[in-house]
Length: 378
Ligand SMILES: Cc1ncc(COP(=O)(O)O)c(C=O)c1O
Image (tube, rainbow, N blue to C red):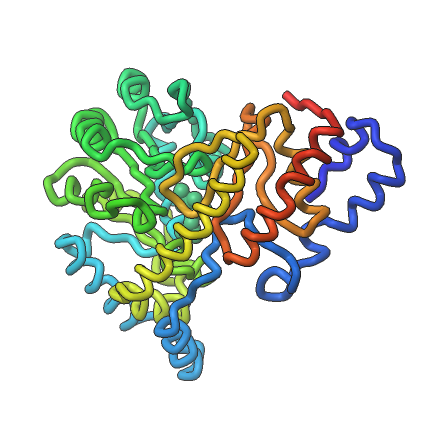
């Protein structure tokens, strides 16, 4: 939504503020996705999915009638147990990974504090905070990275969970695989360690960049995965956590379990999971549009964080990221505004190539328009 306070604070005429309101994202949203002509690059969705196999499976599952999930869940869990060499007592399926991440956050918040870096995808953590939980954040490294040493130092006896997104959202940055594994090994002796790997399949080397193997070795590590990103199934809401059986039991105490899953989504997940051809295609498209964003930003001498994800975090220099978001929105390109005190950093998703082309084409003009407004927040 546009911030009226923002416009008025900018000293713009009331007429301009009124005109701009008509560009609120809702006003050009189609029923099931963005309307024609709108480049939706604000939520890290993957427009290259669902795969043809997933579409077929969803249609078949729905045509049978909208039965509650049952055997399909068993099938998906069997596929997960095989992939990760873990028993079903290590696995929690949920509506998106958010479902089980929220359950984990609520469970752990009753046991102690949650610890995380200064900026990460904290939507589910904040749910636990609204219910009385406490989050402690450690400062970033000078290059916007996650400071593993600072996190380890901050694990006091009252910390129940340390949470890291790898790669991180919204920076897109990936931690060194060996350093993260070493951190997980030692930190998990003090508290549960959650590594949210939502974008793992998009990284340079997904196998090297996962810490899932530590779970089988007995470490108190939780790995979150989702079908929302590389598989392009965000709206179908399927994700899962891998964790020690004791932690799994704690998570599931806060969950309605299979009741939260939908048949078409589970069908799509089953059909997509081993579809390596589609995964490769999806990765390729994401990498291509990510390169386009980076090239465009670099050509304007803007700094970008090194992304291993389906989005790019761009430093707009002297331009306020919220003013820029609004200028992009006027041009029907939807991106994200300010995160916390990162007032000049702007996140854009590596979506459909033609949508990214619109972002690239609008970039110089939107940047200049936002710069002219000369607004600083925070
Ligand atoms: C790091 C991270 N984790 C988890 C999620 C939640 O995704 P979902 O609930 O669709 O699996 C997101 C969504 O953007 C994310 O960026």
